[in-house]
Each structure stands twice: as C-alpha cells, then as structure tokens.
Image (cartoon, rainbow, N blue to C red; front, side, top):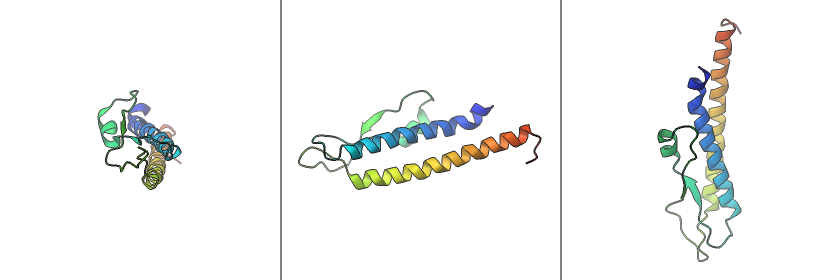
Length: 111
C-alpha cells in the first residue's frame, strides 16, 4: 500500500537528485576546455521510465559553445539548482503529508 502512495514521488525525487548531481558537475567543469554540459530530459524520464532504471543523460541542447569548446552556462546551472531545491522541498512535503495520513488512518483517525 505504501509503495502505491509514495512510488511516484520517490521516482520524482530520484530524478531531482540525478539532476542536482549533473548541475553541480556542470558548474565544477565550467572552466574545463571541451566539457559539454549534461542534463536529463526531466519530463520524459518522469513520465516514461519505470522505477529502478537510470535516467538517460544527454548533452544540454541549445547552449552557446565558447572558444575552448566548453558550453556550460553557470547562470543556467545555478537557476536549475534553485528550481531543483524548490521541487525537492515540495515533493518531500507531499511525502510527509501522505505518511501522516497513513499514520492517522492506522491509529484510528485521531491526532
């Protein structure tokens, strides 16, 4: 029963974690010649892949490549980190709410 309630949110949070790691790697390599920014197609991964599969990492399309071959846009990555943090906070709040509802049902509905 608990898996049915939390599985989609768990998958969502796993994808957020993967995206967070990619964004931090992109920022860490912002000055590495030839480095290409990486990301995931978040919407595609969330709607089509089943739990347990690793998301497909792609090169971020549409970024301007500098003379050294690097295409990391630090402002974009920082924005993505902030957005990711907000999404993660919302998802964890939803999970806590669902778990509290289950706990209330188990204990007879009283709080």
